[in-house]
Image (cartoon, rainbow, N blue to C red; front, side, top):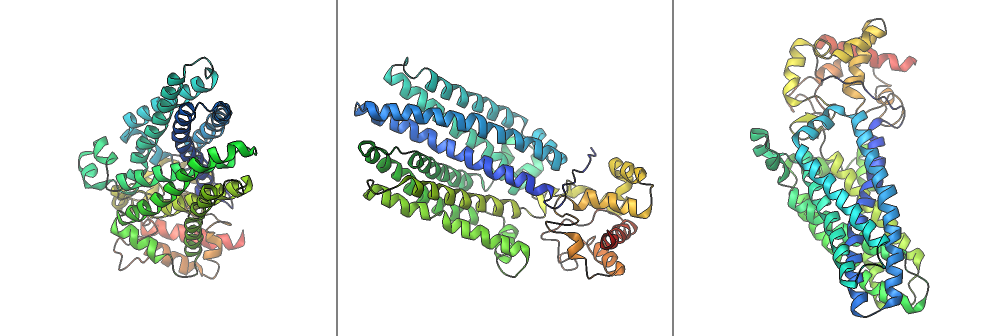
Length: 438
């Protein structure tokens, strides 16, 4: 199916997804860890008959309800809207491949919200053992939601040979990076949940140690487990993906600089582990702003990990199946032979709306095949990248992108091949040359 292209100037459509996603995944993982922390602390407070701590936990549960129901759910819907506009073909493919998985995840999310609402609103009417049961049901639903989403996310990086042959959901779900990713994400969730608890710790000295010390175990244990499982996860990457990540740590390109900032974030993720020692050993001197700083550093590190994971899929949105511009791998040969415009109704309609000139046809192909990763002016600006090129240079470069042999096309490891005829490549080259005068 052909879809219109969502053209976001300067920032680029990919960053719209990225910004919403980083906020959402940070909240979603925090909520998972906070749910486990809440269940553990509720049981702990009941065992000690600690009414002061129980009253504080109920207040913290209310804050968790606001966070998950407004910001978590809102950004989750925002991701669906963004990916549906930016890459509708890939979104359609994932829905079809994992329709039962999405249904399970939505049921789990409904269970997550229902149990949290019951815990908060019926807290004083539930018996103590009932509160513990509801808290653990909430934690279980939240974690199982992560279990399901993890399978779909890792599928996009490593669908595996089994799925490409059978197209069975479970063959794609339990792929080679599934378990390492689940261990990493569960570890990050524990660390974020502990940091969230520390950031909301009251000022009363009587409560500080009873909250900070057990929460520090969540943070320290989560950070240590995340470091170990992160290495395991990286080793599970497909070999070309590992080579792409390691190769882009060098040089002065924008991509290399992005990788270095992401690595700084991964290093910053270790800092909360040191702060956890402080909270554990000297809770009286530990301050809320320190916990907030630790939470921000952890979110930066997790955002860096998500950025690397997304870039590691290049040039695919689903590795080996679909390129980042929504063109399937098995469509390229036909487009190169018969023409992209002949097979894409939207591109033909767009060109016709602008007079069906050479520039209009070139722009239509440019929008369909380039704007998923580039902008005209802004992020990965093609006007800047081609500023020193002659019109002939642009044509030569785009025609060279038609090559499917890595020895002849040095960009093939990070950019989709051009899916069109030589004449269509010439049209795109002419359009790129016209950007200088705009």
